Length: 316
Image (cartoon, rainbow, N blue to C red; front, side, top):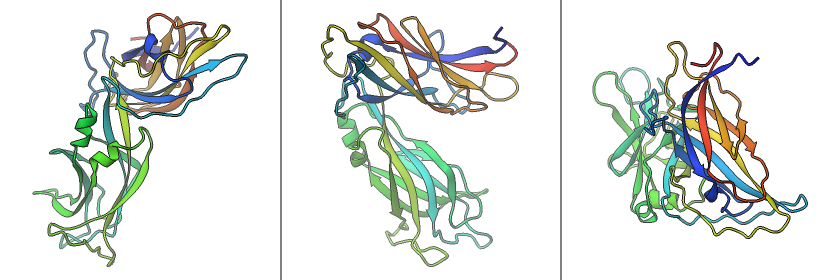
């Protein structure tokens, strides 16, 4: 008897007719908004919109052989993309206060909107262990991506009372970042300048700098359009969808005590696959690959991904 219960958080769907018309062997990353049973967006404990990230790949086999194709990065209808910066560290920061060192945080700015990191206390060389993920706004077309302009990056000295003080600033060309291959991450090191454009020199006499990783993510929402023309099925061919459940973010609190223990369930054509449970995580990471069943033709309906909160005392 299974004594483990589950409390549904919400789900998202991708239509099977779309999944089975992808390029065979090509893996695509998709970010989907999570909705509840009434179709309303799920809002996380941190007030962010709940999302799940997947990588999906269509495989083919004829007598056990699989095919592969080269990747393409052209925009498609209903697609959105965003820049994600993963903050790593800053180095050689200057002294800003009469007493103590500097309490740095980093602010990213895209088209007037600010996205702030957490604060590191009393250090000239702050590190954000494991990298702190900063998600910038989605843009909804190739033209909008070209119009993003410079992504501002400011290192600030946090003040408990009063306004935070600028340590130094820099920037990166948003259009160039959006031209990158989707999902490919690169590390960027930028030197900081003061308000007059002069290089900021740290307490140790070296040039101040900030280091972060950037990548581009794509989303199709629940209305993913077909990306490619369907490849003709051969007489003895079978195909299957392989899903990598990557991560989810901004999940809501489900229990009075504790946080949330999420896992994902993927269902298509009556077949169900379940991910492992990540304990105590509003932003869980799985990177778990789930293989759905082989079929001789495109299934009807949709593939559904549902997130659950594990309850050890039974289903709520």
